[in-house]
Image 1 (cartoon, rainbow, N blue to C red):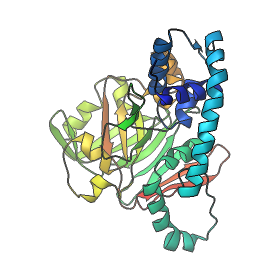
Image 2: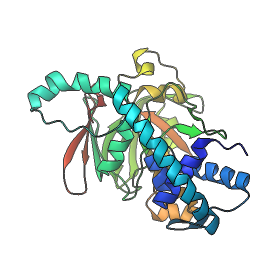
Image 3: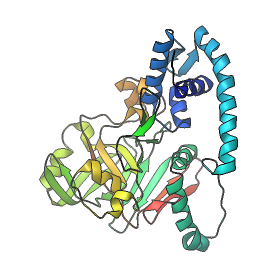
Image 4: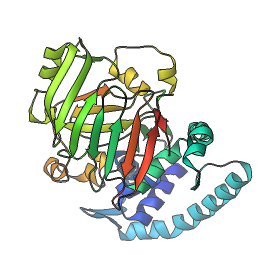
Length: 336
């Protein structure tokens, strides 16, 4: 039997956390990857390892036997990896910095941006640990938008796990981190930072006025009729399904090339999407029915259209459930 170690590692964390979604959060991946790996492992071993329930998972008798042995091996390997990591380089952890406002803008931000480039995985850990209730967007275009996030939201990245256990990112280059907004929790105005190409039609210099999550006004200097048609596909098309963070100083953005292709252009800018929300952006979402996902506050639609809102002066401030305000973006780039 030739089973990749990464499969056993994922099994270990799933058993330890008793949840596929929490395991995805810990391993910086998404729930479908965890589910797929566990199914492959169960197929290779010829048994069921987990009892699936609405609120998580529990080990079967066979799973208990495997966990007893695997836990010892994973803990020993992890201990060895940690010792080597500490000796050679910084890969993870928490760094707390206390500085004045002047020092933050004059000295720390350039250093923090360099740090984020070297250790991108830390962003997701921080965002999930802060568990923001609101994000407030402002910039010189006129964007002034407050986005409420679902209570059980998760930030995810575009990485996946192949059958052999190797992680990869299909959409390269990218620094995108995304989650889903609360369907009825967006208020304010948001201006596009780049043209949008939808169904072959160019829509440029547009903005939305949003009230209780719904787009109540849509205006564009070019292609306004196409914009209004796009948000009228169905009831959910006028609500939002994605909140994505991308630093303005990204590989695609620095090329200063407009591709007129959302798959490429979205990697150059923070963006939002009207329409369908991704179930993996809430804890346990991948195992929920459509009705259950909607009950958790996520939008449903037949469409999902990304548009870019990131600028060089974009500010995003997160508000935690206990009322703390924490800068997420300053001058278009990550501040945490």
